[in-house]
Each structure stands twice: as structure tokens, then as C-alpha cells.
Amino acid sequence: MIVELTNEVIPEHEIVERVTTPESGAVLTFRGVVRNHHRGRSVEKLDYTAYPEMALTQMNVIATALRERWPLHEVAIVHRLGTLAIGEASIFIALSLSHREAGFEALQYAIDVFKEIVPIWKKEHFSDGESEWVHQGA
Image 1 (tube, rainbow, N blue to C red):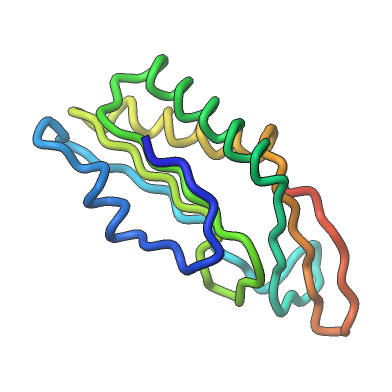
Image 2: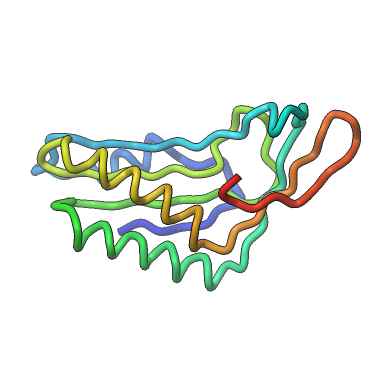
């Protein structure tokens, strides 16, 4: 299992290579990116911060649950911290398994539960100069 927080650009290709096994017939990924709007307001950038120890613990809980519920070969969950520009990846999840069907359900579960239980917060900076902290799941 790969469970990480990083202040660097997420190495997506490297992660895909690391989760790919000889038994894998499918590698599914989710790439969450910074969008340029939220609730009708123009967003210029986001700042992500976390309670690292608890975030990693909860990310491991998700990865373990994924492996217990679905026939996965490997799991990777990586979230970026710090200031991110529009279009940059904030989260990358990769799953490898023999067949794709179960992977789609597992991937949906992973991102939904992540947003519910992992203590990561984001501060949105708007084009009008204002900024505000937003619930991670928003």
C-alpha cells in the first residue's frame, strides 16, 4: 500500500507503475484537480493543510478497507499539501486488480470516504482578493 502526503507535485506515472503487478488486468485512477470556481465565485488557487499523523492514519484505514472489501492487488492514496494552482492535482488514487468492474466501485468508495474522514482542509483564494476555509469535501 502507498499512503502519502506530499508538498511536491504528485508523481502520477510513478504511482501507476508502483501499483501495477503482473496479475493486474486493470489499473484505475482518480485524479482530483483544483478547479477555477466554487459556488459561483472565481478561484485563483487553493492552500491545503492537514493534521498529518491523523490524516495518514485515516488514509491507511481507507486503504485497508479497500483491500478487505475488493480483490485489489495494490492501492495508492496520495494527497498534496501546500499552495496549488488551477489544474494541479490535489489527490491521486490508484488501484490495481485483475478485472476492472470491482475497481470502479472501490474507487468511488475511496474518494467518498476520504472526503468524509481525512483531516485535510483547504483555503480557497478568490479573484476578488477574499479567501475562506472550506470543508475538504466541498
